[in-house]
Image (cartoon, rainbow, N blue to C red; front, side, top):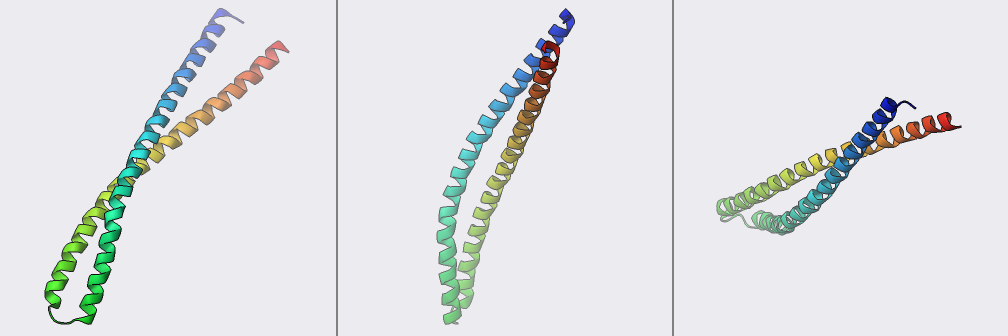
Length: 130
């Protein structure tokens, strides 16, 4: 094999190695970010569940008792606003997970491409030596 061909193969292998290392690092960052995001989601959901139960109790009380309904509706509205704010934070966190999923998809695609390249490279070496 000519020297320029060997040099080209070495450069291609080095580029693939760099791409694989970059994909592995990106995958690690995605996993760490996903872990952090899931912890945040868990922290946000716990109080929201409690608030949702409290809202349910308030609505039942409003249905049973007609007196002071305006004041209770104001309290319930404030709680709904608080819950909506919490849900907005959760939606933002889930948006972060979407980005993490995209990075994982890119890393998996890159890995598959490297696997195919290596398979074809091995088949080419087998034909030249056999």
